[in-house]
Picture (tube, helix red, strand yellow):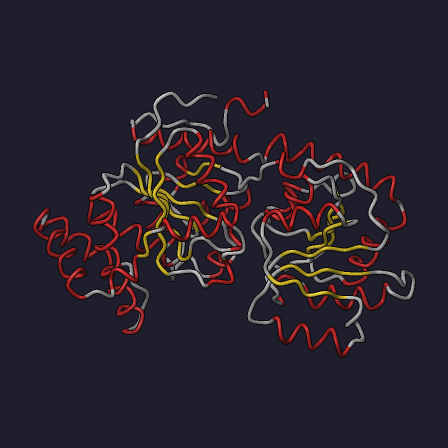
Length: 424
């Protein structure tokens, strides 16, 4: 697959950019730029300093347009709305009506929707001033509402990447149906994700639901094989109950009786970190579990290099990028049979996939990796093969670029995945 005439300018929008938990968006932006696209990054809010864990994040943060900060300037806000109104009074009215009729029930929800409309005019003017050809949004909640309204105001087409799982808990609230209807196309991260989008949209729009995997750079994790000390477990993700961290602590407490040198490194942060740390101390795991906070991509790669496995016992996910990173690093993974995870991890082949919330199954899966290092190595190799073939960020960016080009030129691809995928 080749991209001959890329769009000159694409804008990327998320609620917060860059975030330490969303490095896959940074990789996607970098890959599109490498293909020749000019990509302008936009964020509704500024990220806090703890997310700028490396030079890549700091550079992206400095170059990103922050919508809310610009909208807080009353004169600038008024100017943007006036320019949108003068450019197309009818278009301004249609966009305002779109905001009103897609607002969830209740006065508070309507007020928030009008805030989004106010921000949308600021974003629309920014896009027009930079001659943007296509707006693309990640995470289809409030930032995607702003993208939808900015597109209606400016006439610039928009698309979005649909992740889940949280938006699937309240698709009516976020008007997923209307976003799918008004978007030029939707990049779904998995077949499961696409099926959910189909469930909440009109069949007339199913043809523009394509599958674009979040990707990783396999080469970043292609280090020389090492022989980690038996008993090193790594977790990377938000420190939250939904990620199954409390269950992991329960498993580790029981497994220490069989594997007394077992250690766990937890990479990440979140509002539940203090409670999880307290739980670990009360369980007597203070010397077993290490809380590392947010880490840079290079640091995570180094941690993967020196671990036996990655364990992610989540209760709700899309397709976790950290699983791809571990598999690219030839590390077996232990995770749960939810959402799009089985599309990435094959049980017994590239890792172990267990029922979410099943403590005994989780302990058994971890034990299988520790007790059979030869099979663990085989699973690691299988995992890397899978990621290289289907989850390379460069190949996925080429496919996304083909979608951008196809929809801008009114000749979109009619396949779910790249035709050339079988040749990768």
